[in-house]
Every structure is written in structure tokens, then in C-alpha cells.
Length: 367
Image 1 (cartoon, rainbow, N blue to C red):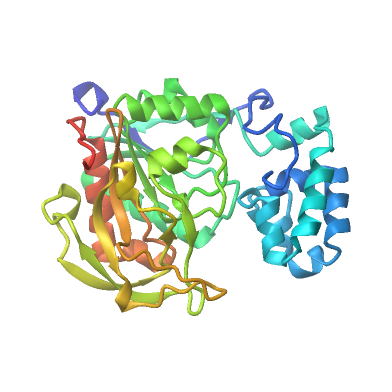
Image 2 (cartoon, rainbow, N blue to C red):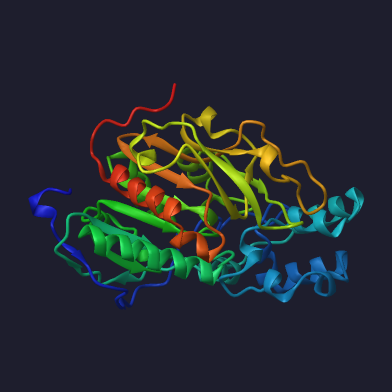
């Protein structure tokens, strides 16, 4: 895509065409249960009443931003079961709630409300001439950390200007369609949280990557407590988030380059110290075929969760590449603090990652 015919490049966020209401959202028809997204149960008057009956102190103990039904909302990235563990309800009360939720019918109104946080809006994206065409994607239905999103956007836009790339930005899921993606060399998933794509948009993204498209994802793009798209979490990223330290949340830690010969690591020192929010994951992405570029030295910080959970992974990848079909995927867990996006090492990492992801050469997974 990045040949002579592809030298079209970017401007900025542009308006989207008015679109039909979404009817193919994930979990639209799913029965209610403890494993439902919390937001879907809260959207149902009957479901909300069941929650309040089971936990009368819910509204007192949980901040409003966590149980809002307006996207972006934290309620979109946790299940009912997750929430009730936080509240410490007994197994018996959980079982009673499960039985009541299972008996709750999913109405036409419920289905419509579940789909309202998705969109079919097709933005009018205009690329100017450039060496690469980049789509900076920012639709967020879960937790939106505005300063991080904005700092990352500014950083990637600066890279594009320095390198003569074309970059456009959109927060519309309707951009993830074959007609738009065939024009794109690399998609940047900017701290995406929450399930944001309809079923047809999911297929478009999966086809794009598997047929040779590049994707770069940063920090919050793999930081949700719950995922409702297994391909994204287990295949594209290759692992699932389990937590980060909170006491303190931001700590100095030593980052080590594991693959110094990898093109993404070419401009980096062998190790350095950085202060950020450090993610831990439930499985090692190596098991999913990832090629680890950077690891964390767990002896250099305190990998302890907010309730004293041991977040050590022993072997702790923090940035890696993955081969999905013919496509190239890069993920870096670095990037909660806005300052990180102007850090020289992190900028060199992300810039090299975009160049690597845009390469249409063979992508060999790690054995």
C-alpha cells in the first residue's frame, strides 16, 4: 500500500456521514448473567433494580463515573461478577442474583440500548500526500484517560510531520470498514478501552490485519479488566490485563531491551529507567507467538496490586510484536502518564514500531 500510488496523506478529524442505527452490536442478544457487561444490566430498569436489591449500597460505594450508562464508562469494561467481587458479596447472594438475571428477558428496547454506544458513522477522511497513510483511531466506550489520549495523538502527529507521513484521526467506528481500510498502511489504536466495533467492523479489522495490514496499539488498548472479543484479546494482543500497582500507581522501573537486533529496538539503549503505570498480564504473550522487544525488571519496582495482589510475572514483557496472518501488530504497555509520549526513548520506540508495522515483508511469529 505504501508504493507510489499510495502517497496520499492526512489532515485532521473530519465530519462523519449520518448513518443508520447499529443493529449488529456484539452481545445484542446475549442473555443476562453475572458475566454481562455491567453497563448492559444498568441499562435495563429491571436489571438495575435487581442490582440495587442485591447490593443496596452500590451507589454509595461505587463512584458515578464507574456506573454511568453513558459511554465512555467504566461499566462497559467490567462484568457484573467483577463488580460484585469488588463489593465483597457472598457466593450465596451472587448465585441468587445470577438466577434472577438469567430469568430476565432481553427485550427489543434492551437490544437497542446495548447498540447505542456503537456507531455506523462513516467519516469523510482526507489524506494528503505522504510516504505512509496512517489512521489514528480513538473511539472509546470504556475508560477514557483524556490526557493520555491527547498526548499520544500529539506525539504521533509530530512523528508524521517529521517523517512525511499522512495521518488522519477519527473516533468513529464506521471508519473500520473495507473501503477505508484498503487505503491505510497502519492503524494506531490510541488507548482504546471498551468494546467499540460492531460485528461487521470486527470482521473488517480482522481481515485487514490478516491480509497484511499493520496495527500499533498503546497502553490502555490492552488494559481493560474484561474483554468481550476473544480474537482481539487472545490473538491480536496475545494476553489479558490483570492489574497494575496503586500504592504508588506510578513508579520508576527498569526497562530492558530483549531483542537489540529488532528494527523496533534500533534506536534504544540496552536499558533505562522510566516512571509510569506498569501493567501485569495473566499469561505471557510469548505463548501466543509474540516476539518480545522490551521487558520489565520486576526487582526495580513494587509489582503489588491495590489489595496487595502479587502482580509479578517473573518474565515480564512490556512491549512486543505479533504476526497475525500476513499482518504486523505491535503493542506497548507504556503510556499512562502524558509525559511519556514526549519521552525520547518512548517516541523512538513508537516511531520505529509504525515503520515496522507498515512493512509488507514476511512477519515470522516467535517459535
